[in-house]
Image 1 (cartoon, rainbow, N blue to C red):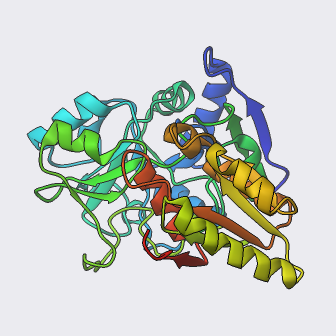
Image 2 (cartoon, rainbow, N blue to C red):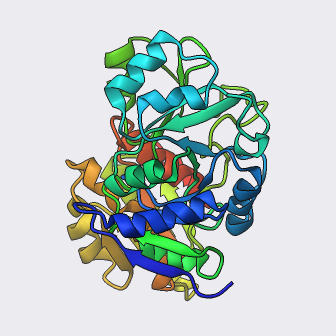
Length: 355
């Protein structure tokens, strides 16, 4: 395939001519990349099995990993599911458009490759003008995982997509950097109480405030016989460099862990980087001025930290580091999503005794 075309789109005033051209590609059975509020998606007509196959081919994605189906409104939910429980309707009315994916009973009209042959389907309405315009113009639901090579770091800009998929897809709609920067929360609504399968842009606390009873998937406790949601595989979101993740929010725990690692790696002639928060900068500057540092923002503003996470991991790879260090930012709000992504991306998770 020739070089992938990148078309800039003003998210405040999308060029409907370009949106229409992209929609024609979707209707013709092609795959294209488009922005959402979370990460860039790689989309195809959800009702066209051959088109959906192209997603798996472009990404190198295994067939047992289901896709999220993107729709333009709550009203379109009836086209992809056979049953809409009252609480699902209420969730959609309250949280959509937004970074919440609901797992519901699948409409048999959806091809099996969308859902990994399961009888459930993951669905959401994105909160992004370009994504919504594309879905409406395509006159179908759009199946879309993140627009990157499988198991790698998710893309939060058109540049990231181009780095991974140039020549593999015909078109990227460039709507600038995404705002949330981590994927949607996935809530399994086929059981009661519903269970968060993947933390993301909507917090567990917000879901519990709205619904009352909400469980959270726990890798070490819950038995997984099949994957109902993307983002549940053990290894995911991984940079090329080896990521060491310290599972503690306390400097007195993660600083000694980092200090030992950095000294060992530098002694071995390796290049080391750290993704940190502003509050860590003084310690790193005074102890290790020779390593690569990227600050994601303040620990007091985790939404900002989340929005910069994937770009920082990609930038560390671009700088050629061999090892990346990161610590936990807490398990509340979007901090739980950040923890989930770093743990799945990690080469090693350190418990950092006492943390």
